[in-house]
Image (cartoon, rainbow, N blue to C red):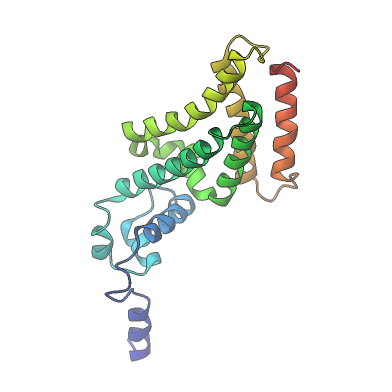
Length: 210
């Protein structure tokens, strides 16, 4: 091996003292690799190489691959919860807050498509990702939205007497829009906010009283 090749190999590695390798950098690289290669095929060595550290250095931050996956899930769910919570406490019409939560969710998912795929689409990795804590976080996120639907129901504004079913059905519809935008990015879709507006209008005409 030439001296140039040795030098190049060394420069690809993070030097000691370079911030001790942020956990976020590992998680972001792992997200990309888990989606591109498949979670089962991805290896710690592959993740470490993309980050630019040794496998040994990576193990200082995460004990194994499932731990990385679980933290990706937890970090994603907490980001969604924080976004929902900030909207839910606004002193405005609950129907407006519902729409804003849908807009936030689509925006977050499109900005973090790899995380969304892993958490909500790639069912093959589910068993190792959905710890009880992460399952509780997922329900906590949905519960914020559910409470807004129940608020509408309490005010007599829902056509249905099943607010929980309304919340589930409308949220499934939003997930459908997001999943197709991410899974088929090259299709000539309308703008995400336009799609959401059309979806909301259609749903509300059937579920919410004028």
